[in-house]
Image 1 (cartoon, helix red, strand yellow):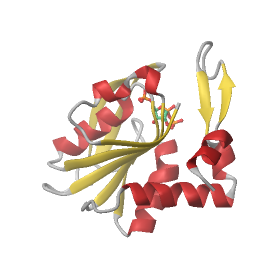
Image 2 (image 1 turned 90 degrees about the vertical axis):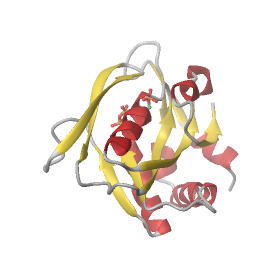
Image 3 (image 1 turned 90 degrees about the horizontal axis):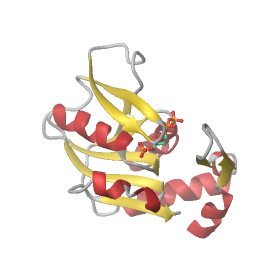
Image 4 (image 1 turned 45 degrees about the vertical axis):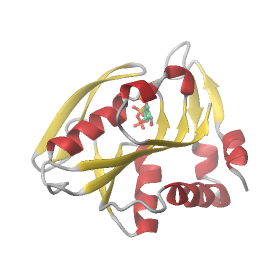
Length: 173
Ligand code: PRP
């Protein structure tokens, strides 16, 4: 298996969720045990040599890669969620999506000052989602070690928004 195989399995759905958006659907990768496992192994490999305490990931697709990766690496997992989902005291940050405006929340006690955090998501598009996640982690005193993606839509230039952060992506479209 190679990352090119994974790239080929990611299917494009035209006009979802809105006209003009070509949605990258990772569900074929998830349902294939070998491909899913390989993806997590490659994400783990990309973090080799880094020292960090936690993986944080935005819902929902970030959870699909962030949680198994945290389990694989033996670090804790922090969910970053859409408004009204986290039960304890939260911080929130409003951000712009590829298609709309949204906000994200984190539990105030999710990160301890000085902890190093890797942010993981399935896809880098405009960068708004992980930018908000990074700002939430930093508001709690955490240090963003790096931001790791399975895929990146290079033509949307999300890296520009994330200037100053260490960005890693495995598959580029
Ligand atoms: C998608 C994707 C990333 C984000 C990328 O999530 O999983 O989190 O958009 O876009 P950006 O770089 O422009 O912020 P979405 O908000 O669709 O939510 P979901 O994972 O719950 O489907």
